[in-house]
Image 1 (cartoon, one colour):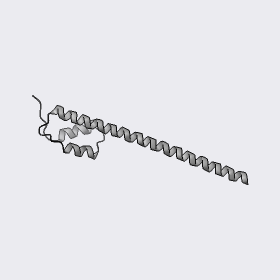
Image 2 (cartoon, one colour):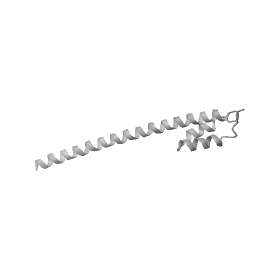
Image 3 (cartoon, helix red, strand yellow):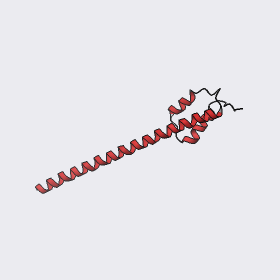
Image 4 (tube, helix red, strand yellow):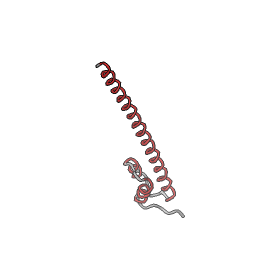
Length: 94
């Protein structure tokens, strides 16, 4: 016989304990789940699935942030070299 869950507190607790940071969208999707007829194995699979999606989105966000920082560094270096070249040209003209 499978145990039944009582309320959303157990799922919310499992989501917070494993995922670290939980977005408001994931919490709201947990609130929309009907837990009254759900057994613990199904609920655990649901939480693990949402945790996996959250970790994937966090990884994508980290990768995008790294790419943005790299592009910013490239542009900064380019502008510095251009300024140095202009300064050198003006210095040579004097």
